[in-house]
Length: 494
Image (cartoon, rainbow, N blue to C red):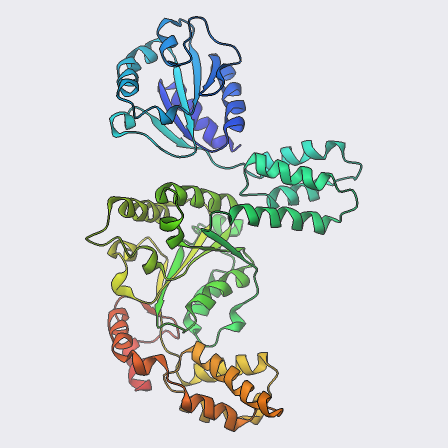
């Protein structure tokens, strides 16, 4: 487990904190580390759970129904680790007991440590506890675990491959990683590549189980985007942003970017291209699933973000972020506000290299707090493509489908497709191919011209919304297409 968190816990114990609340789902792993720490600070160790009572053996005069009470008569400084106790702490008698015994605990050198998968502290005792979130196993922890599991394998494992396996398991609990490693150890004829894929596949299955995270393979890069020159340049400059050389140069790790713009103009594709260009994993966070997943949204978000930090460096994609925080306006319930508050704090203060790419179509539904400086490194406005960008987009989609672009008049097609989004241009190409396929002929200029002329672009039905978005972004966002004023661009295309 990361050395830093245990140094932090040890410091709190030596400073005299009588109550500590550890947030982690890994009871067994936490208990082993706490027993080790009890030896370091020279305190007696005992553990209690609702089912087993006291372990390894009941202390003298201990009452299993009142696990804290025996400390009143215990003269030896004691580590008391409580599992399941957070479920009792809303009882009036238990809250009063903790408050009244606090001074005695400090005087006698006792430490009560409550472990739980999430924070469930009533307001009456919240200030009594030092709360520490225990991270998932780091690479060093997983490396030790992999070596332990692989000790009895007949197949030889190199140190380099062991580290690769440990990194592949990042984001899993120790138990989950151990099960994956043991599953691999049972196979003697699998290749190293197969073993890596097995761990990664199991990790994806476990982390996607809540329906909050979705993993994507890096299949796109910046060459798959037509236009957006300023955005591409910005990303190119940060290609080495997560290298250690950037830290030595004095640069902080980039936080992320917010892409505002017209629906269908490449915001989501851009998010996927960032991961491909930087060779980083891509994970999509579904904020809506937090509210409808049947679990406490704030705690689910906490656990999810801790997992993402354990998996870092990576690109976190949040599509249509305004929908995830749609309930955080004036009529928002307190739970929604807490979720927003926690997310904003994490966005501002996160220490791990998680680059956030958030997209939004409707800025009027965005919480103002989300747009404050410091949340994102940059806010880009992605507008309808101009004529040159339309030609680039058509070229990309025609080349992808094996059409000879040189035989088409791209200037004419791009002019006819004025005010089309990138998605609408792609669909026009697909529809033209269907027309040609139905005749069993190669697609020609007339097919594509027909599908463009008969399509009804979003701009025609939502012109007011597009103009309102342009007005809002004029002084608040950077143009993604090129470094020029939005007004100059609008006048050129009008």
